[in-house]
Image (cartoon, rainbow, N blue to C red; front, top):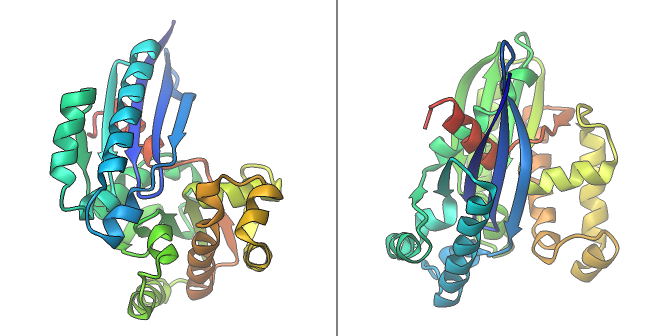
Length: 296
């Protein structure tokens, strides 16, 4: 007997907002299957407000309300049984975040929870990582967002340490990540990976997914340090307009992808990793799975 249930996750990031609607296929004696039914991405760059002036602007509040109304209608049409909406770095730092959350609840009937970097990392790490993690190997999981980057070290199938840094692509775009933050990241990575002979990176986030897609590789194959380094040089050689016209990047991806690549490149360099795996996981996937398994 097959049963299909529908869950939805809303991820309110610093660079974009996403609605993921998932079909969870339940079959007797088998592990549930999670299949993407619909994914809608809205490029509302909340980090531009939050990190530069400390609040979400009236224009972006209106755009958020409209997007949430649309998300609510889409969930209705899809007959979603349960949803959760999480906001990350930009909303954590906007001093009018509570008012925005209250307004969205009133106007769009969507309840938003603002989560910290540790919870964000834990939700993402609880996705399908256990399928990837070989028990005798060491991995540095790097999730690059618009406002922050989460680093989690796994060894022998267990989480060793985790840390969130205020170094995201929108902050880098606005020259808001000082050398001292880079020094802290370098120190954290080197200290935490020093005892391990070989470390492999696992990358998550829209930008590394785009880089992976551009490589034309099969899903389970890793990207090399040499490839990431050459892509970094290549992207830097193009203008913003060329990245849109020649590479087909979205306008809100074309300016931040270089900064994201730099973070992954540095993480590989400082951990000594030669390869990076790019599974199809993110906060939205993590929310759906955590909801289904009753973890949130």
